[in-house]
Structure formats: structure tokens, C-alpha cells
Length: 70
Image (cartoon, helix red, strand yellow):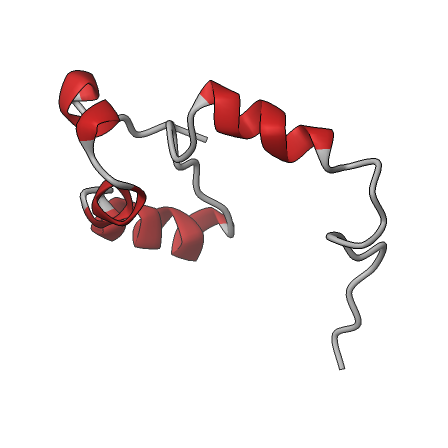
């Protein structure tokens, strides 16, 4: 799978969360999803946000153990 980067890293770090999502290459993301069923969204969250999120994994409340597709 080919990763797609925002070419303006300095600019992307100054954007709000909503603005950051808006500047992603959604046409390429859509193509990737259509072609392979997944897409890489690089730098969607910061390393600090990633650590905060991963620290929640031991908690049962925020996450489902399985997904019912019915």
C-alpha cells in the first residue's frame, strides 16, 4: 500500500484537527479504499495524541471487543 503525505508538514502541524482532516487528499483516499479496502492517513494525529490513545487500550469501556455486523 502506498502512503500519501501532506507536502506541507509545517503547515499541517499548525492546523486545527478539523482543518487537518479537510486538507487530506480525499480523492486518493477514496481510490485507495475502493482499490484495496484501506487507506493510510499519515499524521492524522500527533505522536502525543497517539500515545494518549494507546494508553486507553487497557480500559474496557472505550473499546468494543468485537463488532456485530447485523
